[in-house]
Image (cartoon, rainbow, N blue to C red; front, side, top):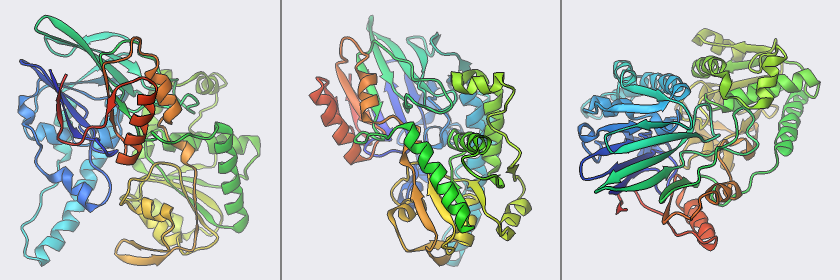
Length: 462
């Protein structure tokens, strides 16, 4: 039995792993690479494997760096079933359709440049047709229930507490009449998650792949996060500026909407227009409303009290482009929530371009910024950035609340690992920048675990 690492090894994005026995091969996730141009170019390169040779696939959750290249798999011959939860299936459809749309637009822009340089045109990574063909292969399951993936592989999905429908997966693999348990953590959530339930513990594993996005960091308490958000909103309002929040469409946008609605109801922030300027986030919010049973007790109570946690009178959802552009004509203080979260695409780039020079406005980051992205450089404090082909001076205040991340910090990750009894034979530390992954590996080795930090392309026999 072998495991191979095709992505998210000594880096955060591009999650993709294979598990193979003598007779069967499956994939776990197939996400997009995100970051600078060199990273994103990897999405267009051929797979390091033949998709048609795989029997099945498991999808842990619907973030782009975990599901974004699945339609490309189908385009190049994968025909196996894709196992995941119902909420993940619906959210993945939203994410992948948006990715297809962006790919088409980006390719049109890229081909204009290539034509001038005498280069051949490039095709989009995949189309909306490829996405719809992908959806035909999905098979949904529920938490804490065994489901047969192939003849010799059984899976059990557990709530990862990361985003709606997210999972950690325990695989029972039988080969030569011997069974082994391999656990893929997926992305693990925090114990104080705003919307979803807590991470479900898993107790048995021979081998574990564990994420390490924040493998060397401790998140501050949720109260600190709330106070910071209230402070930033109030200070921007007093200056008469706009608060721009680049947000991932899934979980983060819904968290921010929930918080702002709650704060307005409590009177801790003034009432002002709040623009959810992201068609994808609007569609994702509809999925959230559909699967309310995944929410924690706190959010369930808002439904019991007949209050919609994702809506309030001041919230304005802008779908069409003209409504989005009209936000730029507003002179009153307001809040703009737009994608994407790393400022590499989407409407947030236009809002930043129109407001980054205004010292009264604020740009607030609430999520991880992959090195090389526009969000990364703005968060780092760059004073001049290139936006939509034009250099802009950064006069707006740039703030960051890192504790909004939906990823567990290292004490929470260690606590999750300590549920396994006896300790697994080996831990593979993945889904973290190299520095974070190595730091986390060293920490858990001191806890008595045996861990390694694999690189992309490594194949390890279990």
